[in-house]
Image 1: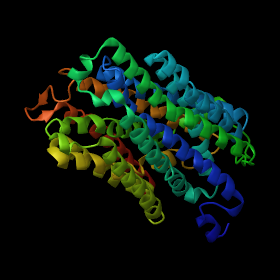
Image 2 (image 1 turned 90 degrees about the vertical axis):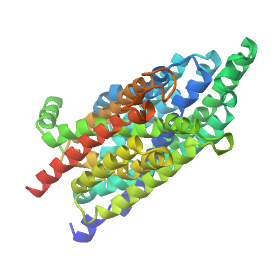
Image 3 (image 1 turned 180 degrees about the horizontal axis):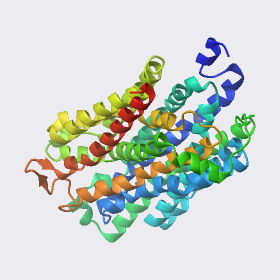
Length: 443
């Protein structure tokens, strides 16, 4: 293979399939960041929920990844990448359409089941798409290629955030009342508001289900290459090889902590801003979604920049330095007062930008057929996004339903202190980057 061919991220023959597969990265970005604000939204529509109960939105959403990643890997191992993608899109659409009966019955548990089904489909898509992108070209450019594909994920996330803000959060009638004013309403008035708001929450998911079906048809009509031409290992051989690979095992752990940090930072920025607003006058209230949009723009910019830098810099070294940056910004979010702390929280996204695809690429580097099962482990690690937000929600509940009922060390509100969890997560990611760089450099 010539140097020019080995440096090329995607060949002309695979360009169309690569573009279609890359669209899937945007598709699950929409779902992720349409759902993140729902923790806050459900808390407003159903004020009887505690912070922990509201955080079950994230638990239901990300637990689907944990449950379905391995079945997805076994499915594509038996059939094909394309079959896995089609099945994933079907589950995605079914989960989205389930929001209609959930809103009609006004059952919180039904919404959680809908999210679980939807992310079962996302587990198929991620388990399939990530190793497929890694295999669609030279191994030397695999991590760069995955970072490029993953760069379209925050584009979908931005879209999801904007839909959440302008079509959901801003349209919630329950958000127009203070807690005292809402409690003073009659039972009939409260029921009308709840019916309206749950329909508002469900509508974007129904539209998303239609979009998913359109993309499924396009994928179905396109020839997706089967990149695995080697003789398959047995399942036991795959597991044995994976568990003996320290870089892979540590990568799964690092991925779980990274995803936990990402979801916590993008979910609890709403509560962080709500706490700041308690000290601000009525005409100077902050809108959390706008800061989340800025965070996503920084995240997108960081991922594009990271893709460019990886042409000349070792990915594991970049992961190490980006991890340090994430730790410093998280400390700022905890310790700095007012807007300075919020800016630090927003800036964490710059350093999170390359983490998921880079951990993925490092962990699967040099793998053959076992990459399909290996991919499942890394997707199962997304369960960190299910567990960590619940733990953070429990910190917010320390003193009650407010966000500053407890002052840690006498000056840190509990909502700010709760970001000690993302800080710990970034420590784990930084250590993984450092160890991987030592292995790669032979030091």
